Image (tube, rainbow, N blue to C red; front, top):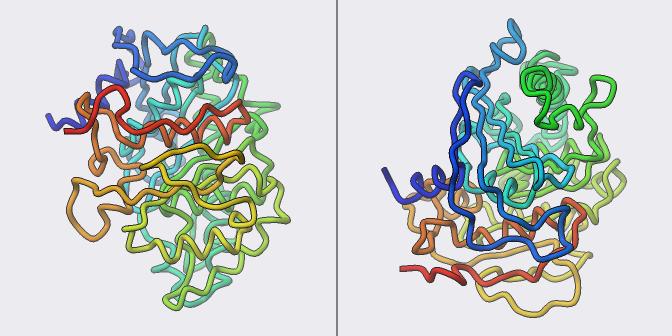
Length: 355
């Protein structure tokens, strides 16, 4: 078992396959939110993780076969909000357990949702800048299918999320999942959308169509053509349903897509909210940072290593205890997007220096 996977298992506490099991106790994480930041500041004694195949939550719907994940901590730690995470191209919902565990440490319920992410949007759209928004819309709602994206309504992110929440509400009525449904619709005002790469672009688009609590974009959006011309939908973000002040991004400068991401952040209006802040050398900053940047080397190899490091378990730069060096950045982003008082951006590995 790799150090990264071991860390994910330790933080997750328990894995419940087929939706029946009892959580096992796990150690308290080293860092928690400061007093007053959230409804509870105690680290969970347990994190229960459910793997829910689409065939269980919405029989007959079809679509990607890998299961979604749902994570929850003890009731006394809940903060009343839900993180919904969408993985990047080709990744399964189980890709990013360390990020999800940090959300639960902060008191969120968390879902990593399976959705149609097999093909990069850039592959589908290339230089057709109006295509990107149309693909994101189809992936979200299943509306207006085309030869570029033909997700049916029951396969869309919106339907899948409601189906999964409804299943969890029925199966585990005491775990609070029903709080995120109103009249069998997602209560977007209590939801933080988060995503990596393609998933980050998707959640950023969804937030233009639904008013959500906040948005966390990891190595995303990458929606430009080869000449760094941004996709058309990005210019409409400031006028979208969710205020631009509720958007937060994180990227590594070594990311081969960093030029695309930085371009998209600028067009969306994030640059106007303040200068980027380094997560590698955090210092005092008076304003809430909407753009977090890292230049840290990552242990994984390959062209996409720095791109994946902001989310994927297998690409994390690790502290001695196996927890990601980016855990403080994730906590900062989640607190900010959730509308909670944000603790200062802590140095990585403050309690366990990297090897």
